[in-house]
Amino acid sequence: MSASIDIFPVRRGALVVLGIALLHLPPAGAQEKLPPAPYERSETQLSLYGQIDVSCILAHWQIVGAMVCSHGLDVHFCLIYQNPYPVGVVESVRRAGTTHVREAGAYLAGFSRLPLFGRTSSATTAQATGSAMQFSETHAWAYVPELGLSDTTIAKPQTQHFMSPAYFSELDGFFWRTPWADPLEAPRLPLSKTVSCSQVPRPEDCAGTWGPWYPRTGFLTHPSEVLASQLLGLRGGRIAADPGIRACAGKYPYEPRTGHFIQMIRPLWKPCASIGTPWVRPLEAGAGQPEGAYLYVHFGVFIECQGCFPALLQVPLPPL
Image (cartoon, rainbow, N blue to C red; front, side, top):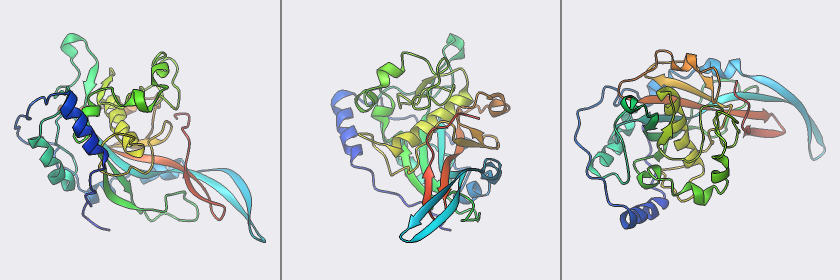
């Protein structure tokens, strides 16, 4: 396995975003030089590999059906397997230009010398004012490791990534800090906001009762910092999976979806959990972080029928 990150060229959308930002919004000023945060560069690609919750795959593996298909004159019968498999790493941090991943540090260091466009924040939830508004920078990497599991009974993507940069909100800072992009790209957004996710959690618009997938910005009103960090991190993966006019560093090949899985790595290792699960206390217990920095592995759920069709990403599922 390679131990280096290939830095993909910035997508063409970055130039469009930068031009719009320069025309419409003045810079918020250069970032203040701060001492390193305790979480910075605390993990490597290899250390992440050793912390993947393989039991997440095995515990949620199941046979969901059977199929008969033909290849010319040959008739083939197969069982349809379904299981999670790691496809990405996402993080949310309060301090721009910082990361848990050591190999990405040099890449992100350049952002600390640039002005940030739009509103930003370095604070956690504003408890003194009673506000639940939160803001985080988000980073996402495509990450599909080879775990040595059976190719004949485990549904898994055929293409491995170890690790490929996909999204850095500092690069997409103009749209990450403003709600201007999604109304153009998601016309259903105004309608979806008329009913809250806590009242009616719709799989396409909501991560269960955790909150809305849209707008895909770094601001989220949420009473839980831990759940907000997961949702904001996954929003970054969704942007890179379907960038539109957004500025991305690469492609996130498997869109995060409701009912798929996420595993906390830092500040506290936890087993995987279903995205949008209503059973949130185990996710929050002991996981608060003074710096508001969180690192996760994202598992997509795949179905496959050996000999009939390859591993396909499942549609949104009911949270477990």
